[in-house]
Image (cartoon, rainbow, N blue to C red; front, side):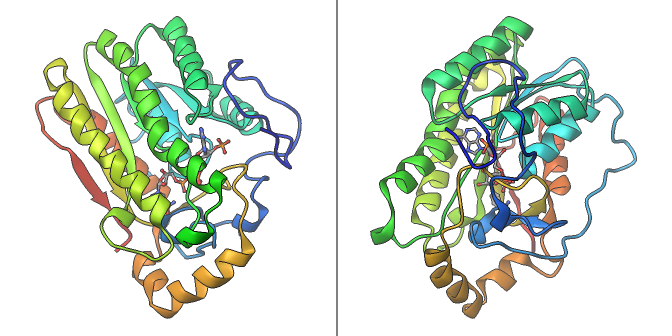
Length: 315
Ligand SMILES: NC(=O)c1ccc[n+]([C@@H]2O[C@H](COP(=O)([O-])OP(=O)(O)OC[C@H]3O[C@@H](n4cnc5c(N)ncnc54)[C@H](OP(=O)(O)O)[C@@H]3O)[C@@H](O)[C@H]2O)c1
């Protein structure tokens, strides 16, 4: 899929790139640097806040994931990028999965030799198969799968386009099914491992104009419950992070432009009802580094420790 930034989507070559703009250039309306709100209930209408700064604890970078192989979807922006950076700093071999090749190439060059990128559209089963075929060929196993890629566009049900429906179902729900299906044999080859699914606080509260996002994230949470039971005996653990607003870098998904007509309805209502102020919370929104810290906790906790759902919200 082409975008204004010259990006190309779909599975194929490892770490390949094209010339053109860098991170986030496909979403100029969503990039009020240095703080970018790319998700939560207001994704698509831009949250700006003064998030508490990111930053690592003193033990960061002490090799806690040495020898591990991690695949992260949506790893070129937001929390996926923060998780990728942290896991790489902890010594993991990290595979970034996203569609845009320009960002993938720039990040693999910036993050060092233990980070590779595979252009992948998680909503396309063939693309996912190809990507995990490359992971199998390169590593022969996988220790961690992070199903982080997600998109949303606030919209009244009657105004949803076919693309808005299929893209959200494809990315947020079918994507994690495809990736989990492909990853499980590799997690088994590692002798057990982790699947982390990224859900949203939208499953905890009913927000207006969030139907597609809510139903896909609710389905994702059910997928996690099933995976947890099905693969318990093989020590493949699935955890669901129910996330609130998180602010970070990257610029969001490449081909998911702001719909000004719809956002002009959504945004005033959310503000008038106090939703925006409430979900950002008293700290001005959490930083994606804090979300990444939770991922590290999940994958480094003792093997016998049971955990299925973690809520990580801004207030
Ligand atoms: N940020 C928040 O406030 C917030 C709150 C609650 C939950 N969440 C959840 O947290 C996750 C990350 O959100 P974020 O806001 O941090 O991300 P983001 O900045 O919006 O970035 C989205 C990432 O997903 C990738 N992506 C989009 N469609 C894809 C597809 N079909 N196949 C592969 N990759 C795809 C994008 O790269 P390409 O476009 O190049 O593919 C990009 O790397 C999502 O699941 C979101 O629902 C976020």
